[in-house]
Length: 377
Image 1 (cartoon, rainbow, N blue to C red):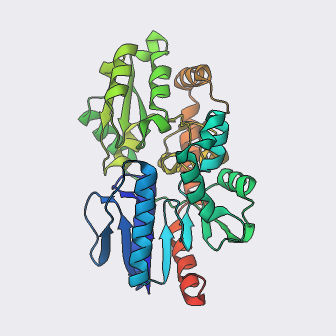
Image 2: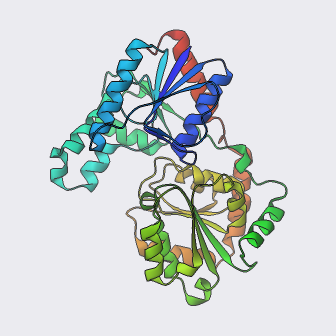
Image 3: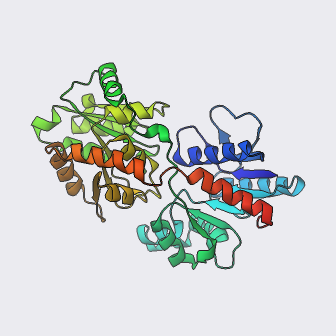
């Protein structure tokens, strides 16, 4: 059977992209042929994967998305497949992997009233509605209960089409036996002293992830804490304005930006606290990766996977609505206490006892079942 995947952009360090590639490789290992439609692909293309690069035609995101959808449907009409799996919202999908939240809810709650009359709103709502409207056929894979509540509220989506996914964390993120040696080597490499406090933030999309919020919280620390604090930001995004903010806050010499990297497990072992005050986050895989690595987490409750921080008792979750003062105070309190040692042990234990690793198998099994029962194309 041929399975087609659709996503607008692939790069090696995005959470959505990593989920997609794991599922595609799993299906290939079980004998399926894989075809991928995307506008751009960065990095190596796996052997035996057919890549179809769709031209990004149009002046707006809406126009480009419409062209992508029509191009893919025309090609599928000529070269049919058994199932189409989408990682971005668009019509014509058999399976949709929801890596983000409900656009309609966010737009109506966070935008001015007139935004709902814009062409941009009508387009993205229509593409979302093509998946979630009642009586649809698309099988929907969700990462968090937050998503489920929002989509059902906005579209009345049938529960029978919704499948809640377990996390798909790589076991390589778990704390290894030589964790202390990795930590020591990492900190020596980057010139971090034993008594320095390393804050870490990982994720592409610095505005959405709240990097500016972390910078402001760091700058608010008392002098005796700030002089020993270092902040590493790892992710694929434009860092210029965030570097400027760090400069304006007087902490630029203590902040380092890295592009996407393959050695994140070393960063998780080398750091003292994962800070993730995101503005929106359907899941937040890095939160669970940090927990099982033994790295305590400070995050916001808008993140779908913040529930794991609470369940593991491996950090602190800030309640909505977000308040910068609450983040500032929490950061200072955590750095001044010994609670992180307890959070570390609880996070490692959670990684040994909770189901955090079966997402890829779950999705692969579902797609194969659709192919076998004719529930797809």
